[in-house]
Length: 331
Image (cartoon, rainbow, N blue to C red; front, side, top):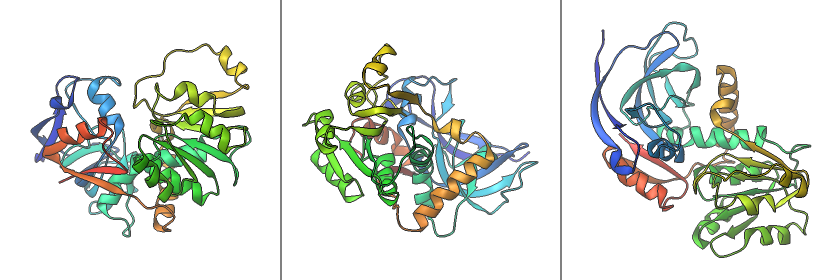
């Protein structure tokens, strides 16, 4: 039995960044439907924070991390789309990407085109696939068409900057929100038609002004508690409120009757892992992402790099909203 040494980041209990501890582990051979990968770079995401704090409880101890890129070292029985030596990238459950080497399910691992670097691959898989399912699969009644207004919160974050660019390529009129003027400028530079500093302005009022009082067809919201109520007021009749995160905390319970009073609007809570539950769906979404990145229509902005040993600081900066674009851990 092969036993390959690897550095990894584990948590033994839920809590703050101090729970992230560097450990030394050994990694064996992949089983049926699995691959063993040696990472070149690892992506950092807010879901990692949710899992660390216990908002999304994990069976402890657990190795965190949901996306990475590197080289396939070995494949298990039944794996036909990958072979040893392939460049690859993934966003995948269960967590475990914060490491040098790991074994994981092969279904969510995709060959990485030669034109896309390991760092870009690690930075873009979870965030880029999230932008893909939001803009292409999480749609209001009648779909989205060129010229339609959409509202995207946290537009200067990793998912947000990808979505700004992709929405522009699709002809959508994206209104982004962010927590500072500098972040608003970043969203505008990446394709948002309008940007609102929600720390200084009432974004619901501004959205109504921008849309001539009509509202937007869809709100994409990863912020949660702090933006929820006003976001509902931004929607046109029959509009869609698409929640996909809780950066400011979980949304409080609400009475369904309010949705009728606000224009017969729809509410959905989406997760990436429902969309990439099959090998076929994962590959189709990844192909779409790879194509738009290779075309140049979407550029992946890696604004922060931390070593694996400095992951505690990375989490502190992410939670303090000190980061923009994508963040990676280097190995």
